[in-house]
Length: 114
Image 1 (cartoon, helix red, strand yellow):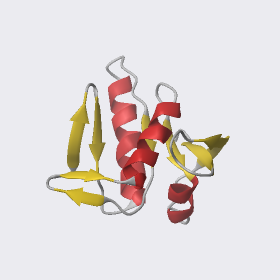
Image 2 (cartoon, one colour):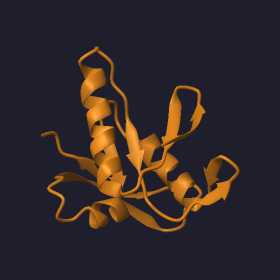
Image 3 (cartoon, one colour):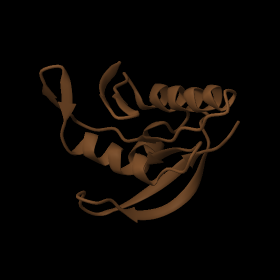
C-alpha cells in the first residue's frame, strides 16, 4: 500500500516483511529491464498512524537504510532479515552501520540476486 511520496521516492506498507522484500526485489528487477536502477531500504516495526500517513522511528529507520543502499540494491535491516527466516530469501551481509538519528548499531543485509 503506497503511503507517501517525496521527490522520486515513496513509502509503502505491507502486511509482512517477506512480501515487502519480494516486492522491492521485483520492482528493482523490472526497472532494470528499462535501463533504470532503483534502490530500496526496508525495515519493519511499529508505526504511528497520522491521518493517511505513517511516521515514527520505524519509518525513519527504513529511510536511513534506504539512504545506504547502492543503485540496484535492496537493503534490509537485521530485523527484516530475522523475520523472513524460512522464506527462502537469501541475503549478503553489508556490515554494521550507525543510522543518523536512530540509536544503536544496525546490521544491514542486501537481498541476494536470484
